[in-house]
Image (tube, rainbow, N blue to C red; front, top):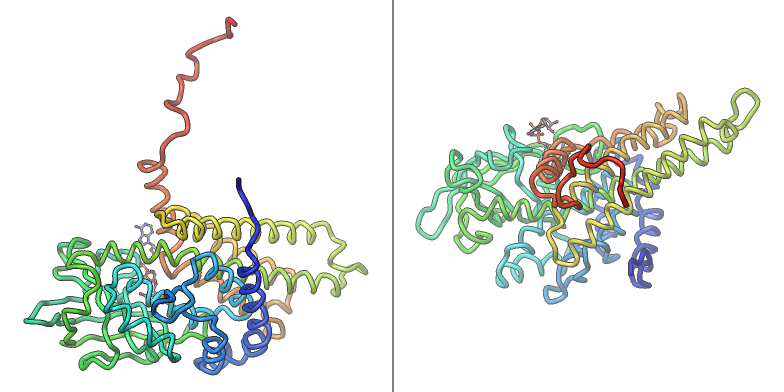
Length: 399
Ligand SMILES: Cc1cc2nc3c(=O)[nH]c(=O)nc-3n(C[C@H](O)[C@H](O)[C@H](O)COP(=O)(O)OP(=O)(O)OC[C@H]3O[C@@H](n4cnc5c(N)ncnc54)[C@H](O)[C@@H]3O)c2cc1C
């Protein structure tokens, strides 16, 4: 039987995250958006509230929650501030390769400290000349005795200046593409590892984004995740587990934009009528609501698939492609409903619009999701009918 209800524990977690977003995120979102400061006090509160690092298993000190629970939490938080939520959630992205491929020793050494204290883990895959084409990674790794030596640079790495360690993807030979990719845990204080200055961004300004440079950085052999050549698989598995959350981010952001629009149409008048009385406006709200509802169902299906231990690649791409477009459309329409006020920072609509754009870019662009889905529709999908019948094979039934 299909069931759309949440457990009491899930509802309680959702309530806690919603309260946190209302108390600590939304009221400070303007300040961090304007200044671009790193929201350390908010992140610390989040860590203290037990709303961070949710996937870390109980045996390493974490709550051991599933993807569904993580999604419920980030939907609430993204409604509070998308940028802060990126800063908070990136720890989950940073540790996912360890959850996917780490040994017990690696998990004990690198997961437990995140639950004992506020610490940061960053995910370092993208590079200045490579984002979508993960197999095209140019950061090189060479084996020397008991160490791997890393050389190259990563770009757009969220929280990099604050990271205690990075999960890094590098190549034993870029011409061998995905077959040569390896994944490592690299301590941020390793000699030869440096981060660049924060880059200025259109949105998500409450998150710090910088380059990470590796110059003859010596990484102990025991810090490799999986085996040589497993890096590509680890990265793809990671994305299948984290993309549902990006869809949940998008849902939360779209939801808060719709709620602002809903309030505004109840008070703003034009042509001696409340905006809410125009059918065009009602239809806009109807479209927003449909998109938010659909995005939520899709991210929950992707998260549920992942939590069952099944491959969530396809539902995660469906959810990410749909929900991130929905966030862009809903924030744009919510801004439009505010007219000129939507365009200035008296209301948060222009921030929501700027923040929504990133969802279509990071963790696999909208085009990459469609590339995955196009391949699946052509080669992976099993048709429901045995064979499409010849259209004119039979005429009038003779029974
Ligand atoms: C604020 C921010 C934070 C980020 N945080 C992180 C992080 O923490 N860690 C990390 O590793 N990365 C991070 N990224 C990087 C992000 O994942 C990449 O920007 C993204 O994957 C796209 O890569 P790219 O920018 O190199 O674009 P490209 O790959 O150069 O793509 C450019 C355009 O071409 C399209 N395109 C590319 N290939 C195809 C194709 N085969 N078919 C059709 N269209 C195609 C893309 O969709 C895009 O529209 C972050 C980025 C930003 C902006």
